[in-house]
Image (cartoon, helix red, strand yellow):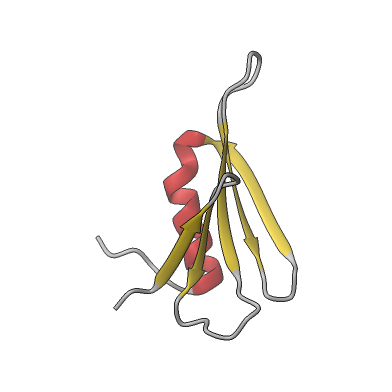
Length: 82
């Protein structure tokens, strides 16, 4: 059984829990900000709750996958399978 559904656009990747079937949905969004002349590449991961409350964290791109799963585990109660 699939637990997450996702879509992408120019802004980033948007993921929601499949068990959440009544809108508005809670969504985890992943956005990559490329490196600039004086700044390294970063990833911004945010959770937008159905209430509209937004929780955001920005870190170097090396932290993208663990940070994504931390948000999914914390916000949706889902854990990755090895």
